Image (cartoon, rainbow, N blue to C red; front, side, top):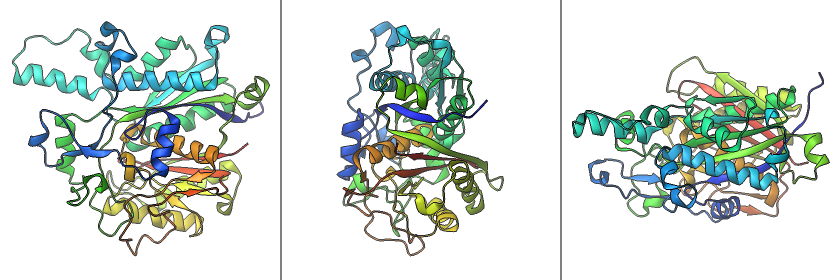
Length: 409
């Protein structure tokens, strides 16, 4: 069977800087940060009191109370982002062959809030019983399964859990489902809702979380800066509709871009320390599948976590494969690190960059690190620029890399 081209025809997003694609991207272009102090009953017990969180999400605006109560926050995010993406794509599911439509979703921690609630009830409150749906709310595939259930999608359905690369991998693997004829449409992306006491304390123990900027807490994530101190945890979801190109053109769908390359690899060196060669390997594989040379890239959305190791390593990997002439930015400087959802959120940023012909900045980049010497679009986004071919990098704990390349049609 001949391989098929794959179009992006729908976008859905819930993020710390906006809960629709237009607000999300305009916030990025304005350098608006979603990082702020947590407003929880446990915040005073944290060393890291900052996060990039969604304060204006009301599950009862989207679900009946009984249904909302049976879904973890991560599942709620995934379903709403999926609804947005399907509506944006203009798909009438009632008239579709839903056996040819599947769901691939990435998440790092799954139902973290439900797991935490269970432990609190058992070990703090000495409860003898848990909620009947605890397992179904906490399991890692709950979000993807609920998306498929809600929309009646009976094509392939898989959940990918590869830490920070989860949703990039989900989009790349979903692309292959269409490219090789196993599905005609895929709803793909990721969701994460891990801002619980236990999860944050676990991240504190790793000593990778950013210190609070004393002058401007919202500027505490500083990718590629000499004074960077670490990452900031975030929450949210992003989903895209991927579709066979001929099918999308025939129905007159808006096409954001064509996914032309996907590269995945394993560092196989250290579970937390990134590898220049491993990251470069994934970039090369994505470029090879896309059939392009690095000089054809107009923009790279970096993994750009703001940790000491990642930013230097990623800079070296980009330079090894692509040289120094391509604009690069880290939108994590504003959204925080959405872990399993990060790749999908950043892929949406790439789709909007093509749509708007604009490049979002790396915010808070005032003191450049001499070892990070690429064009990081510091502080101010660039409008009215040529953006035809973009690359999105995701590099995870455990060593999994996921790199996506897309091109304007």
